[in-house]
Structures are given as C-alpha cells and as structure tokens.
Image (cartoon, rainbow, N blue to C red):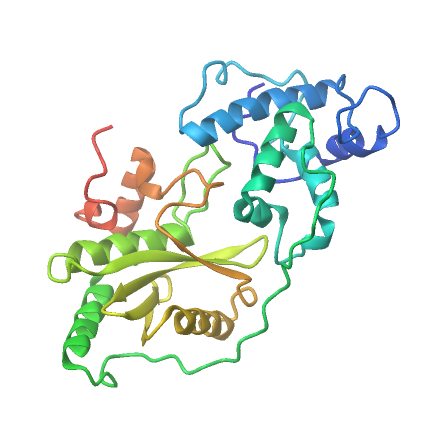
Length: 327
C-alpha cells in the first residue's frame, strides 16, 4: 500500500526500526550504523527516502514515487526516516534535549543535514567519527517585562501616526470565528490553518493595506521553537522599530527599538500566555517550515474552506498578491 503521508509520528514503525538499527549491530553484513543492508525494511525505507529528498529539494514528486509501495503493512504512524532518526539521536545525544531536538539540529547545521540525508538513502554515516559537540544549552530565562500596548506613549509624531494606522488595520482583519485546522501528514498532506498560517495570513493582510502608504515596511512571521512544539506570531519592522502581534489572541505590542528587545518581549508574552515554555529559539520566517506541507492558500480546496469559514469576501487579502488562484 502507498504511504506517502506518513511522516509525523514515530509510532507504529518504532519497534521494527529500533530492532533493525540496534539489535543487529554485531551481525556481519551491515551499513555503517549497524543496520542490516539485507533487511527489507531498511532497503525500502532508503528507497522511499531517495524519493523524499528529491521532492523536498525540488518541490516536485519524482518519477516513480507515485508507484512506490512498501512490501509490508504499515499504518499512518510509520516514519520511514526512523532508522536514521534513531541513529542520529544516539550520535548527537549530548547536543539534544526536549527543547532542542534532532530536527532543530538538522535545520541549524548544514553538515548534519547532508549527513542525515546521505544516511537515510544509503546507510552510510559520514559524520560518525571526530564529532565535536556544540553548545546548545538553553538560554537564560528572561524576566517578564512590561509589554507596551497602544500608541499614546509614542513621542515621535510620525511613528505614532504609523502605530495608529497599524492598530486600525490589525483590528480590521477578520479572524473570527476560530477556524484552526491542523496540517495533515506531511509532506504530501493537506495544509491546514494553524498558528503559522494565522501569522502568515495576518502578514499579508498588513502588507496589502500598508505597503502602498509605507513601502519601507517589512512584515514577516516569528517562529517560536520549544523543541517538539512551537508557535508563530506576526511581526513588523518600520523606521527602526518592531511590533509583534498574535492574530489568534487579537493582541498587538510595540514598538521595540531593536531585535533583542523584540525577542525579550516575545518571550515575556509567551510566558504570560502560559503557552508551552520559554521559546528555545525565535526565528524570522517568510516561508513555511521545511517539514510542513505549505501554507493554507497553496491548496485550492483548503483555501476555499478557510475563506468560507471566516466569511472572507476577498481571501486574496490574506495571501501573496502574485499567487495564482486558478489552478
């Protein structure tokens, strides 16, 4: 059976994968991780991974991928990358924590990314020898700080005028009722409308309404990483000042005079919301995370579903102006 949407969990295949990767470590015909190259599970996971990386790096489903089938029964929790995950989590155990997972390391370190990819398609580990641990300690907790709201406290007249316009546009965005939908299984799954989609939709709504009058604005999302979970908010930079906002809560804060002040404010906001823990990392984004199927508007059916849910007469105000909608 085809299983192209089975990447989110480390569930059903875990017992098979761990046995394949670890229990055979002293058995003769092995890849560099100790897993048997004759194991059909390993071989088929490597074949699947070859298709996966071609898709991930080109955005196109490669020839033969649609015809691929595992020879054994799998369910929606099976992760074909699990043999490599198990190995790399062992190798980099000293660098990882609940707040900094192997996925964070792969995203941060291009050498680990390359090694992970090579191992997943061949069983060859090019990073095993001579590893030097990196300092991935959790940053010091930042105390809660007052979060500026509104615009009356701003002394500069031009900046206060912009702030008032920003608040007006932000509160004009229509994100009611609550239309949250989780992504389905990646990478060929259906995009949902979760926190990063809320943040990106607000990003484009602000851009559509502000960029003509204020062409120098920069609007982006902030990805807040807590390890295995995360959140996303919208942020804006104008005239040396930053604001951030959460369209799901309807709150907007700023201005902040530099990036460090913005980060500190976002951490304080998340603690006050009692959401997760302190973000391990805060990353500026203008594209979706690599392990998600894309933003909500990239799927025509989901785009219409979300527009209907919110009652948007012009959903184009919530995604890029040049995105084609006639597919």
